[in-house]
Length: 267
Image (cartoon, rainbow, N blue to C red; front, side, top):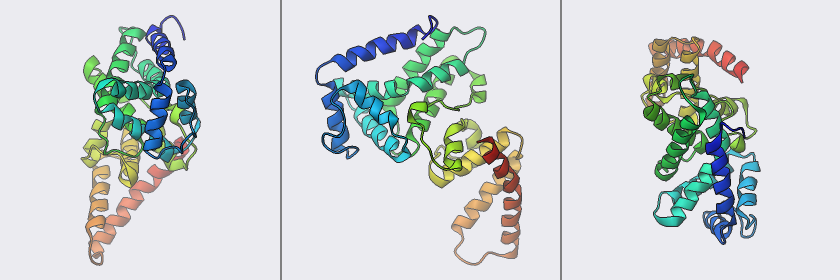
């Protein structure tokens, strides 16, 4: 890393000490085995190798499981919770570097922003809402962005994109999954559309598509809200759709079709 990235150089030095401390690798491996993430003896007892092996697996479900296992430990107290949080932070270093770069302005020094980013990620690692058990890496980075934005007063953070922020945790999935994880969906914009803070599952993919369409000028905000209304109406329906409901559904599909085409092309 360059001379302007002293914060991350310092993290690397600290990480080497964490990895050299006796018992840390065995402790983390034991947590993951206890959580059913890995079979007994499957992971290395050397912490650096263990974390590298976790990141090398291009599997979304696996990434969610081991991250949640560590975040659960990080939510506790004492040195073990601090170790769990430190492992999560190390796994997110590539994402933090890119997030820092995305938030730079002529008035901001790289290391000043990086210090805020790292501090906020520690906070997120210790306080992450464990009910969010899907797309965990993406949600950790989103939470970090929101904390950083408040710390910096960064209105321009709404323009940041998360493309490749978690390359350690990236995986090969279908186009929809890659796009959903490859885009930063600024939650404030997403909440305007769907009125929810959750971005998981099918609803999360709908949020991603609608927010992307609004953000890129492909879908007017009012149309996006109308689409959400139609989706909710269909989900709550107990009988046959009325002619008016079928018309609303057809109109929503007509609005979404070209947005979906552009979305896939952008992937």
